[in-house]
Length: 246
Image (cartoon, one colour):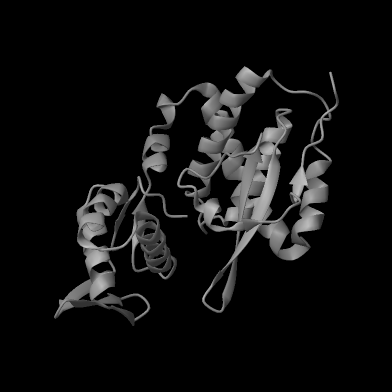
């Protein structure tokens, strides 16, 4: 997922050429090119020149006569497509902080390492075993007891979500929203913190798209850009952690 506090730039193996307000992005490794129209070119130039996507977004708001939510959605869609096909790469703000590994507290380092180890395993399990088998296996290792008090659980949830998000961006193959959310749900469950894995859908043209996220007490934990608000959530959570009453 592209977050607006991050920065995007073309990789060294991608050449960019602007031709009469439109542009061509050539990937030297795949020998494939992609053309952008005038609007896409303007957006791409703004975000690659800015220190962060959020700064470019503020500039683009003054240039395009559209409402902010529509602009945010179209910008995220464009950048997501360019990142997915290798025309742009992301310099993650969270990863930059996590790179200073020794500066993290011991609890944060441990959570980051657990998430980094778990995510590739989830990717393999989901691909070959499917969601239900993966869920059933993970459920075996969850405690059925209350975790920390609400005040402490809030801090633990925030830390866990932040470390899972950072680890998800450092995997060789970037983790999907389902893999990231399943990892977050399970790591919270290991701490006895109840949460729900939610899935929503939307229609983009003729295509249906799905998105997964984790909620605790009705609030999304791993959606800093609130992308889940653009999806209609199913009434029933995919999975949740039942806790015994203390």
